[in-house]
Amino acid sequence: MAYNRGKKPSKFKKTLDKTLAIIQSIKTLQDKGGLHIDRAKREICIIREIFWDTKDDAWKTNFAYNLSVFMDVMEEKPKMLPIQIFAIDLENKAKGPYLTTFFPDRRVCMQTQ
Image 1 (cartoon, rainbow, N blue to C red):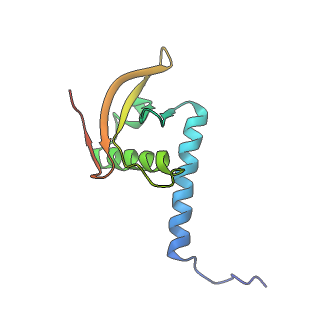
Image 2: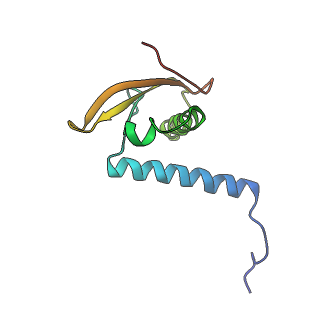
């Protein structure tokens, strides 16, 4: 008989599992070429048609926050510096037009022109 049979996972375990799932999905996106992260410049390039144009503002903010956490996950102390989000130019497979700047400390996306 299993020791854990009938026990519910703790809230910490549930949160950890969700976080690991987010990190794994971001890693998968990077491996497949749908997401490019430059930690040194604090820049992220995404496929605009899939990850930006069809989503609402709350989703965009949450997505950007998850990416900022992913960028700082290996840091001893998180930087919480703004990140720049760009579209991927699908023809050239390079950085495309600017989309927004995300401020993780305030959890807000701001597009400056």
